[in-house]
Image (cartoon, rainbow, N blue to C red; front, top):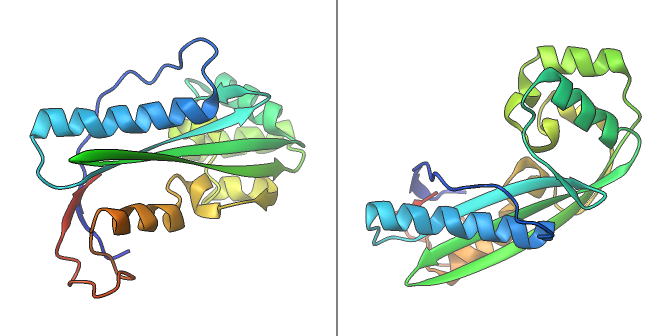
Amino acid sequence: MGVSYHVIAAHVDERATPDEKPSVYVQRIALDKAEAVIASQARSTPVLAADTAVVVDECILGKPASMEDASSMLKRLSGCWHEVYTGVAIVHRKATVICVRTRVKFRPIVEHEIAVYWASGEPQDKAGGYAIQGLGGAFVERIDGSYSNVVGLPLSETLSLLDDYGVAHVFALGARAAGSTSEA
């Protein structure tokens, strides 16, 4: 997107609180990440942070801890619709947080496919145990909403936030040569 940036890891507690709605959860975690970076780095530039959750039947599916965990998640997603929520926060003098929701339908998945997919290494660090932009995309039958949201950063909405904060990007009117620095 033509944005100059530096990646800084934000270490925050990513556990959901009891009865926390997925949309509230991802927004809270995204804002916590952005604020943690600002607090630790004393940033004078905008800080952008995001968090994505895969949700089925109002249950947030985190990153699988084991093959058994991934198998359980993928079986739960098999043949049905689920939602992917991404919270995006930008902080610089003020804070703005948004949430984007996309619905995804998986085709039925068989046990053998789950084993092959796990062996690929791809699902091991992915919310819900899959990556739509990789091999996991083979499980996706339909999508309703933003594809980039399912990948983990809703691009159209993020560009709007960057515009609101004056961060240069390739599509910005009168864009500087992407000379502004953003932190993610």
